Length: 82
Image 1: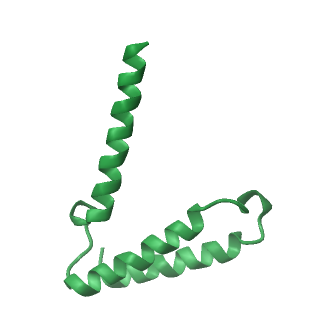
Image 2: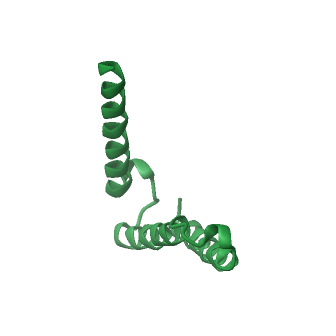
């Protein structure tokens, strides 16, 4: 993903958050602000590295994936103990 593509994705996330702001069913949904936050972070990362964004090289994404894998492993271990 290039910086220009990330900037477009950020604009789309802002627009979607704006569109969703009046929906009662999404009042407590944290996904919109979190998505905007992610898309703000990615162009900043690209600006400092000057490269192309790849989730495999993103420390935040890798930390999230590791945490998810650990949680899945704990869940599996708990199931096996039953």
